[in-house]
Length: 590
Image 1 (cartoon, rainbow, N blue to C red):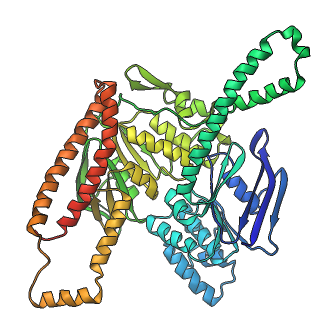
Image 2 (image 1 turned 120 degrees about the vertical axis):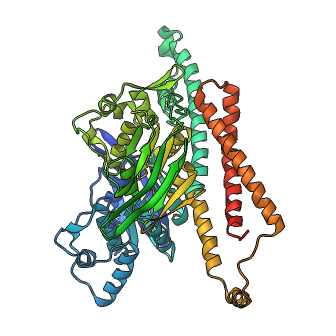
Image 3 (image 1 turned 90 degrees about the horizontal axis):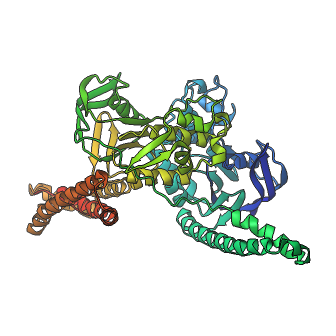
C-alpha cells in the first residue's frame, strides 16, 4: 500500500480551546476513511488543515510527492455570475470532460449547465461542488459532509461511485449507512486524541464499546487507588518529609487519572407528562400544486395516536411542502387538515437557526423554560437538559457565536424539545448532527409518548425511529408502506425482480396470456395464512397500543414497566415480519 499522507504530532487550538493535541495517523492508497467525532471537537478544522485551507499550531504533515487532492468544503462558495459548467472546470471545459460532467451532474439533479451559480440554492451549490471534486479525479478525496442536500437516490448513487475501484478518501459524514457501506477504516477524534479502527462502521461500534469498557475499568481502578493514596497522604502530615518523594508524585498523576471523565450517558429521558388525545389530524382530500408541479392530489390520511411516520422521496417531490401544509404555514388549493384540540406541534425546520449571537447557550434555553416536567414529581432543569444533549457545563456558558454549525443545530433541537410538545415534526433533523447526538435523539424518540413525523434522508435514523413510511413518488403520487426504510428498499428490490422476469419467465407468461390465463391464484394454504395474518396483526397492534397507553398512564408499577419495555421491541419485530409476509401474499390474487 503506497503511503499518501502522514500526520505526525499535530496540535490545533483556538485561543484557550484545544481541539486536538499531538495526534498522529496516516492515509494509504485505497483506504476509504471515515472521521467521526462530536460536534465542536474539530472534524471540519482537521479536514481544512489537511486541505491546506487552515494553519495549525505544531506538528508535521507529509504528503506523497505530486499528490493531487480534492476538497469538498461543508459550505462551498462560488462566483455568483459564473455558470455551472464554468464552476466545474474553471472555464476550461474540454468536450469529453463536458460529457462526463453532464452525466455526474444529472445524477445529482443539476441539469442546466448554463445556469448562473447565484441562482442555485445552497443545496444545489453543494452538489455542484461535489461534482467538481469528483470530476477532477484527485488521488485523495477529502469530503466534508458529502451526503448533505442529497436525496436517497443520489446518496445510493454516490455510495456506489465511491465504493468502486481503488479510490482513496477521507470524509466526515454522520450518515451511518454510508459510513458502513463505503469506509474500510474509521478514525475517531475523542478527548483531543485519535483512535484508529481498521474496519467499517459496524466494526467501529463493536471495538469502541470495548475501548470504553476498558477505559471505565481503568478509571474505576484509579479511583480506588486514589482513595487509598489520599488516605495515606493525609496520615501523619508531620512525617511527610520522610515519605518517598516518588510516591507523592505518583499520587498527583493518579489524581489526574481518577478525575478523567468517561462521558457516556447512563440515563434515559422518559417523560410521562405528555398527553395527546385520540384525535390527531385528518388530511381531508388535500390538493396542492406549484404551477405544473403537482404535490398532492385529493390526498386523504387519518393520523393515529402514538404514530411514528417517516416521509421519504426525492428532492422536489413535496415532502417539506406537505409538512408546511399540515402546520398551516401554507394554504392548500383544496381540501383541509382537521387538527385535534390537544395537539401541540414541535417543529424542527431546515431554516430554524435564528439566535441572538450575543446570548449564552444556557440563556437561550432558559428563555423558553427553566425546566421540563417529566411527571411523577420528576423534572429536568434547562442545564440538565442541555447536558443530556452533550453540552458540557462549560459549553453552556459559551456565547452562541462561538458554536460550530453542528452545535447550533443541536441547540436549535433543544429549543424545540424544551417546549414539551406532544407532536414532533422533524424536517431533516440529522443534517450536521454528530453520531452521538443522533443516538441520543433516537433514544429520546423511542421513549417519546406522543406522535412523530420525520422527513430525512438518513436511512439508519429512519430505521431506528419510524414504524411506517409515506413515500412521495412525485406528481401527487404517495404510497403508504407498513415498515421502515430498509424493508421498503427490500420490497422495491423484490418488486423490481418480479417486474423484470428472465426470458424463460417471459415465454411462460406469454403462453399463459395466450391461454387467457390470469395472474397466479392463492392456494388454499396461502388463503388460510393470509386470513390468520390479518387476525394476528390486528391483535399485535392492539397489544402495542395497550402497552403504549399503559406506559403513558402513570399508574403502572416498576415491574410492569420493565416487562412492557422488553415486550415493545419484540412486538415491533413480530409486526414487521408478519406485515412483510402479509404484503407478499396481498400481491397474489385471492
